[in-house]
Structure formats: C-alpha cells, structure tokens
Length: 225
Ligand code: FPP
Image (tube, rainbow, N blue to C red; front, side):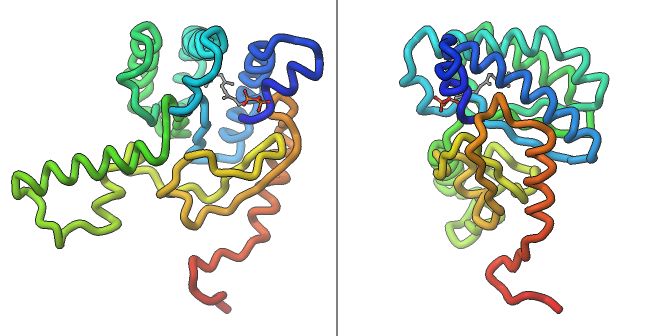
C-alpha cells in the first residue's frame, strides 16, 4: 500500500492522514475482490522493517489497525471474509494482538475471501523461522535431512495452505519486493503503477487484473498450444 505518506505530504497533511486514506482505498478493493469472487487477497500492512519509522507513525499505524478491526469486524464477518495475519505477531503491542486474535477467531470459518494481513512480516524472517523449526524436527529425528524439500518448507511458512500469489501489485512507483513473500512469489506476475495507494481505485485494480489475464505464464516451461 505504498504512497500513503507521499499522498499526505503532497496535500500538506500529516503522514498518518495518508494511512487513513489508505484504509479507505483498501475498503473499496476488498469490495471488488468479493464482487469478482477473488479467493485470496494479501496486504502488506506492516513489515519487520517498519519499526524503524518514528514512534508516532508506528503507534498511528497500530492504532489504525485496531480501529479498523473495531469498526469493520462485524461487516467483514457478515461478508464471509476470513482474517488471517501473517508475520511475527509476538512482537505486536498486546492491545493490537488481542484485537487481531479476536478477528481471527470470529472469522475462522469464513470462506468467501481470505484476507491475509502481513503484520510485522518479513520474507527472510519467515524463511528463517521455517528453517529453525525444520532443524528442530531434524534434531529430534522426526524428519530426515533427505526429506527436506520445497513442499516441506512451504508447510512451515506463515502462508501454509494458501496458494502462491498469481499477481502482485506495487503502487507509488516502487520497483522492489521489499522482503514481501520472498519464497511464494517465485512465479508471481508483477504489476506496477505510479499511483499512490490512497488513489488506487477499483478501476486500477481491474486494469491490473486485465493485464494479468493477457500474460502467458510458463513457469519456466514452454508455452502450451
Ligand atoms: C506504505 O506507505 C504503507 C504502510 C507502510 C502502511 C500501510 C498500513 C495501513 C494503510 C494501515 C493499517 C492496515 C490495515 C489493514 C487497516 P508509505 O508510508 O511507505 O508511504 P510513502 O512511500 O509515500 O512514504
């Protein structure tokens, strides 16, 4: 959801107002996702590196998340949305953790759309965490080193059970992966736009999906007839 800060600065507003506008943009994108029967939507809400931001911005982002859950949980639940955080949740402030856990518990049976929220998420940390857990299993001889394969590693990621993303959208002219879903995006299609996230509309989303539909995905193989 890049560009919230720049969107606000351009208007002489505090950065947090940009994040607030970003939440509004997100709401519309979730609506369209339901309309088009998308099954999985992952949003990068807070990275392991975002702690480096000024304390007031970190606090504001955490506050926005709490506010969002408090305000939207009933509606999200009624719409059949399953909230699934990915990331190291242990480092979240207790008040945030409680709200996130409540959202997970309330929506866990929902099946229309899985909304994965990357929270204190880092792709390297996710892989490291998987490696440590697998190593523990090897140490107690539950797993033989020869049994470690790609499928097994996938099982130990936060995204276990969720398909790899087909399409990754990056806004605000950023052309990096920024530690997002490093393992899972090996064959993901990328779509970039200069539009700041608060100005990212359902029309932009449709365009991204239309462009995606034109791509030929070969997964390293040859194009099928
Ligand atoms: C990137 O823009 C945006 C973020 C790091 C935070 C996104 C989080 C929210 C919109 C709120 C909380 C989430 C939910 C699910 C309610 P930036 O700040 O890097 O903007 P810039 O690149 O213009 O500085």
